[in-house]
Image 1 (cartoon, rainbow, N blue to C red):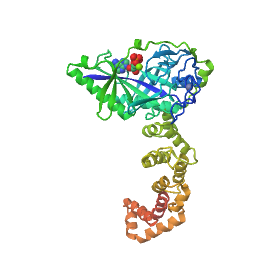
Image 2 (cartoon, rainbow, N blue to C red):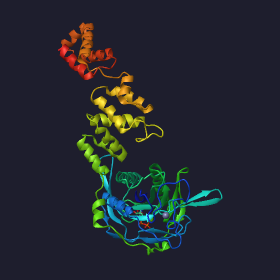
Image 3 (cartoon, rainbow, N blue to C red):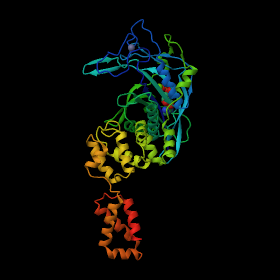
Length: 475
Ligand code: ADP
Ligand code: MG
Ligand code: ZN
């Protein structure tokens, strides 16, 4: 029996306004090489100046993962030759990173959890992009010098599922802190997966393979599964030592296999040395105080939702899974009279269930205030829960006001007791035998009377009021 061992390196693009060592904007630009200057083009004589916003965001991250934040950290040079790096080296933090020894908790469906240790998070500069276009290759340096936080876990994960839970949690923390967009498709949350296997019970680490450039959780899961299968096959066929070497591999989404990309560089290949053009990075006491005041994180928010709104664990997990959804919910709750129960079901069941195609929580015609108002109309009994679905169907397709739609579709509930009383009398008078049976002890018939009145009102009577009046009249 084998055990899977996984360690993850995640490159998060920090959402600072300007680049790491120059004042070029980090904003995306369709036109190539416009967000550049002598520093990020690495022209001779240009000198880097550290952007403190990067340190602020690193402190926030370090706080979120309960890590040590080094008051003094340093930059190092990592040499490599590739056209997307005009300086032929990358500025990174090898020896003393800004953040060390953190941890993150992943939660399993059965309610148990596990702590994954984070070895370090260090600051480094991103490279540009090579664009291969037929016979020619082009280089776009708009991204060169964009700040990255590389977050390196310990090899603590034991399955593809655990790796995905870790990544989703990390992703959500970045979004909650708002220190990066963490958009996998756009490359602002890039994952390198290190995978090895070992006989169960063995404590030693075996040869690891690094899989690069996988841009969705689904493909990461698949890549781990096929790589683990390859390693186990090699072991069982007695060719493990020949087949499994420390190297970088690519995941082929079409063939569903990993392929060798290049042999693993040793640290010596990079000829690391301390960066001579930059000062040490100093996190002052004031900075540490200020930036350790971070927003409420997913776990804390979930706990609060369970207590404050009496939500079950499942709903609390769904709603706090993204900061956008949590904010959406709390905006709904900020409207007077909205109950958590109505807000939860309208949001998680009805609204999410109606999003289709390109629609998301934040770009559909229904925003949090509108859905909140709909919840309000359910909770103040203007409309029934069933009618709310009809109103929502309409609102998803049309720019309209909630009350106007209720009016237009004629969905207002009748709560006027006088009108309901008349309907109850009619039903009672039309069914004298049933009344006799009911009063003789056949209590099951109560539902029949309610049904008849609801039918008479074409579903618009408030069921609670109908119940009360019938109880009183039938005795
Ligand atoms: P390097 O600096 O050469 O990239 P590290 O020791 O920093 O190597 O490890 C990089 C990543 O690989 C870390 O996330 C670590 O947890 C993971 N890792 C190291 N050894 C193994 C192994 N045998 N199996 C799986 N992951 C591993
Ligand atoms: Mg590495
Ligand atoms: Zn620049």
